[in-house]
Each structure stands twice: as C-alpha cells, then as structure tokens.
Amino acid sequence: MVKRVGILTGGGDCPGLNAVIRGAVRTLIREYKCEVVGIELGFEGLMQGRGYPMTLDAVRGILHKGGTLLRTSNRGNPFDYPTKDDPNVREDRSAECLDNCRRMGIDALIAIGGEGTLKIADKMGDLGFPIVGVPKTIDNDVRQTDFSFGFQTAVSIATEAIDRLHTTAESHNRVMVLEVMGRHVGWIALHSGIAGGADIILIPEIPYKPEEIAKKIRLRQARGQQFDIIVVAEGAKRDGGDEVWADKGSKRLGGVAFRVAEEIGELSDLEVRVTVLGHLQRGGSPEAIDRVWSTLYGNRAADFVAEGMWGMMTALQNGEIVPVPIKDAIGQLNTVSPDGPLIRTARALGISFGDGR
Ligand code: F6P
Image 1 (cartoon, helix red, strand yellow):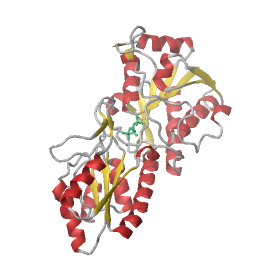
Image 2: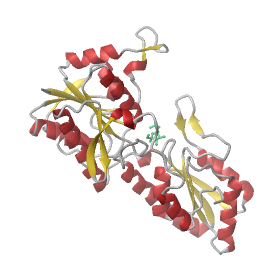
Image 3: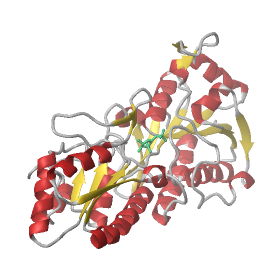
Image 4: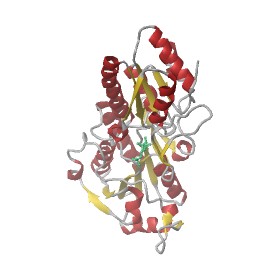
C-alpha cells in the first residue's frame, strides 16, 4: 500500500496548479491517510532531492492563487541531464532520480505538467516507478483530454485584451495585431478570437497568405469598417514559410505578429500596431471554471494513486475525469482541426483565417 506520495509541478506555470496541488494533497491526507512530500522545482528538484513534508496547513489559502507553490522548472530531465563533470555533456541519470525517491521514502509520484513532464513521467513508469500524470498547459495541446486546466483562464485574458484593442483600433482606424501564446497549436487564438470578435485569426494549423489578409482588410474598408483586429497564434506561419522564433536554441516562439504587421504594411494603407500578450496569459488567479476542474484533477489523481493506476493520466472527457494511459497522450499534439466545428462556425460568421477560403 502507498504510504508516502511525492508531488511535483514541471514545465511552465499555469493558472490552476495550486488548486490541483490542494485537491491532491487534501484527498491523499484526508481520504487515504497518506503522507505527502512536495518536490520543489519539478524534476530538477527531484534530481537534487529537494522535498519537504506537505501538511493540510501547507495547502491552506492557495486555491485562488496563480503560479505554483512547489515552483517549477522546464529543465532537469533525468534522462538527459548534465554530467557531474561537464554541464554541456548530457547523460541518463534517472537512476539517481529513483534513488532520491527511495531516500525520501516516496512510494509513488504525482507529476503535474505538460508534454515534456508527461514524457519524463512515462519513462519513469517504464522503469517501474509508480507514477500518475496530470496534464497542465494553457496551450491545450495535450491529447486525450477535452481541456487542460489553465486554458480557459488564458483565453479570458486574451479575450479581454481583444476587447480593449477593439476600442482603440476603432478610434484610430488602425489594424491591431495581437500575438497570443499556444506553442505549435492555435487553441488560444481560435477561442479568444471568436470570443473577442476578431476579424482575422491566424493559427499554425492553417498557413496564411499575406495577400489574403490584405484582401479581407480591403473588403472591410469597402464596407466602411476602417479598423481590423487580427489575432495571431505565436506558432502561426505563412504558407510555405516557417514558425518565427524568439530564440531558436531554446525553442522559444515569438515575434510572428511583427512579421504579419510588416507584411500587411506593404499591402494596405491602414496604420498597423502590434501587441504581444506574453506571460500575462499565464500569471495570476485561475478563473472559477479552472479552479473547479483543477480541484477535480487533483482529487482524481489522488484516487488513481490509491487505486494503483500507474502510468495513467487524469483526463477530462465528457464532463468526467477518467484514467487514460500517459503513453496515449504524449508523442502527438492536440491540434485544431482545420475542418472542425469551431473553424466552420468562425468562417460562417465571416472570420478570415488568411487562407482565402
Ligand atoms: O507552454 C506554455 C507556454 O506559455 C507557451 O504558450 C509558450 O510558448 C511558452 O510556454 C513560453 O515559455 P517560457 O515561459 O519559457 O517563455
């Protein structure tokens, strides 16, 4: 029987992480009489053996708070970790990670994170370590779950930004280009663009043509609408072109809005302004809906531990949190279907995806 459970958050932070931690810790202690060890800084912390006992007191007052009490890191993959002698050379040091778990008396681990963290969790599971995953990402790019927590909050923040850009765009007869996050998928752009009434939405799944954007702007001008709102996902790319990187080495996307602005500037006489929303989409309090789902995600992760459902991930499917193998959720991303219902609705309402359809 599992007595002591470790819990960690890996990858970028996301609204709702604290609510998941709280849901898991409270359930583990109250329902299953387990002890809980909080691992700081994700797998990096586990490699360094950084754990502390988590009590009910430790998770009091955190439900509404953004960020993560346990802090997080997108470094520290134990299977590709810097060697002791040379930080530039990497090797598989997962055995040390397992040793640290043993040393801390951890019988099982709950790993809350996105694709990267879940891949590590899956490999640890393959080594025989009892592990349960919880999908986390504002990008909504993890498969097998209808929505990952944090996504709805990010969409609301982006929608508010669009609302604010609308009034200033209208006052000045300008084209406003808003760049939102999402890595290689367009969920945040699509949802916030529809919610905010964008005129043009550019997503990685539908490569755009600058002349089609310009055509849409001219069409609106001919109808007397002298401003435009363009929402562009950071991973969007021009037809036949590549994604725009802020830092290719560290695989950080960013800057596509400036490229789009330049392209439109050459084809239209309207003034163009760019806003990059950035980490505002990740910081701060989770919305009520994310607090509810996060609480359920945490609670069910604790249930899965108690039931010995190793290698499983908590997934939201049709209003319920169900177990799915971590293996089924990783590898491929949850992308927007270019012919899916949301795209069809958006097109029917006159939103352009810059592809001329
Ligand atoms: O995966 C979440 C996310 O916010 C992406 O949308 C974005 O591309 C990336 O993380 C930014 O990463 P960082 O916090 O390292 O700048």
